[in-house]
Image (cartoon, rainbow, N blue to C red; front, side, top):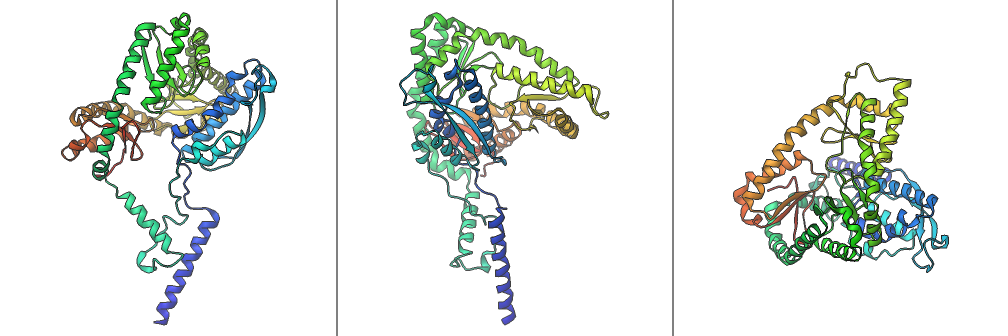
Length: 495
């Protein structure tokens, strides 16, 4: 009996020691984000309005500083959203002074601020930015964070060994029970609890949707716009607000709207002309900035005309690899893309002249695809088989990465080419057989994940059909009912 008690005591002491080690080195996972992309965009809207490069047109130095700092900040936020490790950095902005009454053409109307990016989660990062710039944090403060994960969550704790009232182990066991409960959440139960509320919200927003269609038709008929698209992440009410605002702008400046004839107009998170020639307007910007772009669309067309030549230059210097645009990612502005291509071409040309390429490479890389992205982006192989390359990547690193991943890239490309047709067919079947109002997905849901989700839905059609009829379904990584009635479900849902 004494030996048994001693053994249990020893196990207890070992377990305590293990917990202390984990707490000290931070070896277990931590929750790094809980703000959505839309919430981050909304929270930082006053910040973007104060530092936008267009506000510093007469001051090229300040404008360039803000442009480069915004790129670094965007990359830092994207890294946090993907739960990847980050390196602390400090960036500088010239901030528009909202309290000053003088013109922005006067240097006294803005000031320099240094923002330290050292936080490991989105909420703290956003709050740090706002506080450093003396901007309100009310919006973020009102977003309730999810329960913080325990440092000890995930450890193999046998509930029978420890008392739930034990101050050390009781909380660990409770966390494990909560986790098991969440993992066992089933789609049928969730739909039963939420579909009624979702359909009510969807019906309540129907007049807004109908007005959006009417406003879209007016813009297309009046100014010859090919189509008007919402690609911003906010709900339909914001879309209607942007359409009304643009309609007012067009009414006051009808003489410049001819530049939009035959083009697609997209309300998004950037202002500019994308690589497809579509006019993109930042939904959070003032109408004056929209007007400035519309007046200067012809200048962007000159950039679009040059881009194919720059893409061919990258292709030639890298053994005829296909230079393509990234799948399932936000649009890229034409001028920014031109600069990225120019920079990578120079780097590869220098490397080819001095070192050459590996002898085991095929004579042609024309079966492979390469995407050139922002200077601060990751060097990676996408789930669809594309080489994602930051423009600032040293050529020797790119060459080594391509060498290591040629076989995997070939396999992923073949799988994607097959999957995209299967996905399209399953998507259409789900819409028709479940009588869905709409079926959409997040950008990060690749064809293979969508195929798994749709196939799973169709296999359980008999059970799910009554709950899904008339639903606007959005495939993502979580369960949620949005304010406009859209129902978000994870792609790997359980029945």
